[in-house]
Length: 370
Image (cartoon, rainbow, N blue to C red):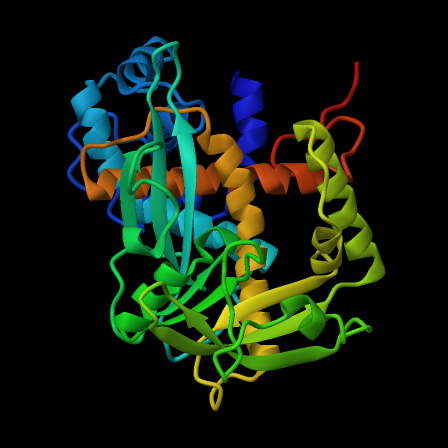
């Protein structure tokens, strides 16, 4: 265990211990103030998915910390800024989305389900919003995974005037888009062709497939003004921005469609294969400020961050979700993201592993063989 920890530690940001001090994570601790043991204890809970009680028992047996489960919650809450800083440091190393600059507030909405361990473990859905490019979590909500009002929806979030929101296909519904517009906020959302109705400016149903199929070459960006209607007859005006995928990207998309159809034992509508050739987003971002190309670039930035979240979601499936306070839940989120980023770094490094599995510099000293 000690050997594995030393190797894992070499993948941490160089200033990980200094960040514990500068973010105030160690401030006010009466015992077990060692930053390394502190972080190891948190990772037992966040990374391994153990409950608070099991975590403190394991930490005590390993002589990492002798604290109660209540104290561990407090430490998790206190470490929120530290864990966030560790995430940002790893992001800086990987260059993910940090080149983005803006003078407006961009918020990325997402959700995932968490199954707590055990036969009777609860299944929860967490809804969260993070800012780009800082990845500051500005909203965190926990709901059951089943029942009315628990699904992915813009109605789950606190939305303010002049928010610039980016969301994926799960949020592509007319009522949700109207809700955002009613708050005088803006949205970029991937179009779900089976659930989002679109009209032309004359109020006639838009033949979306015919509209996008005119784009035959990758790299060509097109846009068209549209209306999103609701059952009550109201409409929200925006535009669709479209780009064709490359041949290789289309092959991968079609392969995924066939795999999902085979797994579910269902046939696939031919239109599904045609739509898979394009990326189609709806937006009501002001056209005079954002060209169609800029809209797609902002959505692309969301996709880059989504790579981190995909790893986060797979890790989040196992674990006890803090439900004690907003700060402890956000700290748990940052801890999961840190583990996800660390995993990505390990996987990337694995492609160029040396025969012994780690870099020489942090561990070895020159010794003469007898």
